[in-house]
Amino acid sequence: MAVNVDILGPAPVDPIATQHMVPMRDGTELATDVYLPEGAGPFPAVLVRLPYDKNGRYCWMPFIARHFIGRGYAFLPQDVRGKFGSGGDPLAFVNEVPDGYDTIEWITSQPWSNGDVGMWGDSYYGFTQWAAVASGHPALKAIVPRVTIIDIDSWLEGVTPLYGAHYLAEYWTDHNTNEWPIDWSRRPLASVFDEGFQQLGRRCASFDYVLERSRGAPRAPIYPGDHPFDVLRIPTLHGVGWFDNITPPHMLDYEALIRNPETAPYQYLHAGSTDHENYQIEKAPIPERDDHAKHDDALAEMLPRYLGPALDFFDAFLSGRTDPAAVPRVRWHLPREGWRDSECWPPPGAHELRLYLADPELADGALPGGSLVAEPGPDGAATWTHDPGDPVPSTLVDPFSAVFEYPDEREVEGRADVMVFTTPAWDEPVTLAGRVVAHLRVAGDGPSMYLHVKLVDVGPDGQAHTLLYGQQVVERPGGGVTAEVYLGHTGHLVEPGRRLRLHVATSDFPVFLLHPGTDENPWDATETRTNRQTLATGGEPASYVSLTVL
Image (cartoon, rainbow, N blue to C red; front, side, top):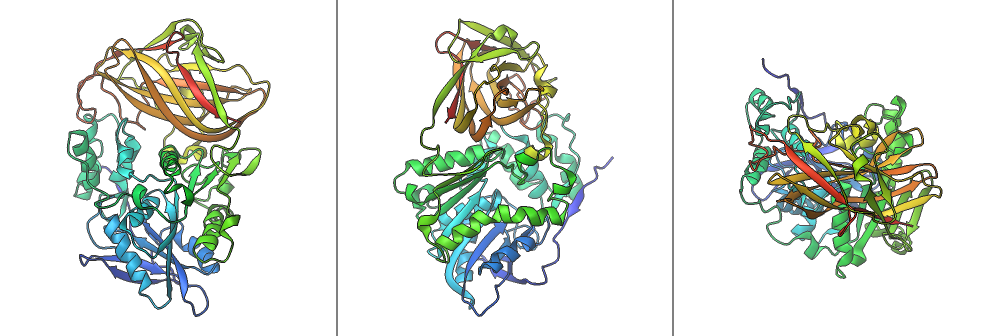
């Protein structure tokens, strides 16, 4: 029986916008809406290049336009090549550098333009800003990339996020957005999207690129010339959310740019307590009335919070209406406490706190499991079986909506293949403010293993909610190797009476690609084998989680 595919095509052009078909150097035309402020101009322009329909409700461009033009900016959302109203083939990542340059060049030739351009946006339309930086167009004066990755196709490496491959299949098969139910039991996993492709009458070239990469094909050059790390010399406001799934790699970009004395002076950071879809942790679980994905009044309440940092940044660095010296280098949110400004990230006074894994014999039993303690204990080990036929189920359905879904990790904490280690209840408050990395001594009888690590906040009533999670491929674990699993950055207050918990597992399916237990490509595997996995504690080197605290 054919699978039912829901197809979402382009919405009508907003009545207050004028659509232009902007020509690229190869003759392809990209659909671009122009919203202009009142007055004669000329105006600075803010460009948004996105693949999600410039007129659709999902990314709220018609709603957002009113905020930008109200502050005196021409606002230009554009469907990228191959998507919705634009021409060309749908192919993620590879055309954004020249298309970004050509679009900015067109903007500067318009009679309403004053020649200065900024760019703003999330996720893929954060990446298109980095592509425009790499293009070297001199009219680009400031960018506000949010929850994104400079080397965006690296997101699909390592322990591959299946939800990333799912995203490509839904958004990049043709000009529309397509949704269909996925049978995750299909094998090989390379075939899980085939029913939808067959119904649509075409395969997704970007998904096939993921498969080709996994089978040894070379990486496509998304930056055919200069890399953004090498040429960025304009003010950049990094927008991240502590509960956002793309924030961990975004913060690696931020760290790299801050370390470089050539790029560090241009970096600013704004970090909120939100997920990828901009739901706030203070409101979790999200009540129906506050779901801005469905309700315009909730969206109207959310947008000023969402857009305010970018508008203020552009006022300082694009239009020149305000003093750039007044813009804080770092503004970060601490749940239940509020916003804080800092001269750097992590904030001054931050230091490392190591919590060592102990009592491993209790880690796969009744909660609270093993211990997280201030000093390493004696040698010990927790052992479990990785069974590809019975993987640890993902607690999230959609990792982009972690705060909206707000799952309780007790759903998986009782499994024998999820090792848990818990602190005592804190008797003093502690503020997490910075990097979190797990250093684990592991062994296994398979050719490799996937490590999935979660840092979990546990309330007095036992409710357990993930703060951060990370993954790592461990090659040839054999009799023992030390693995470093980066979980990202956070700003979080652990209040008295609450505990922190660490989860260690070797599957998280279907959010992440499943290890077959053999040396076969996980995408192509049809046969599986169970593996015996071991996590050592105590001894030298001891397994621990490194927290950054104030």
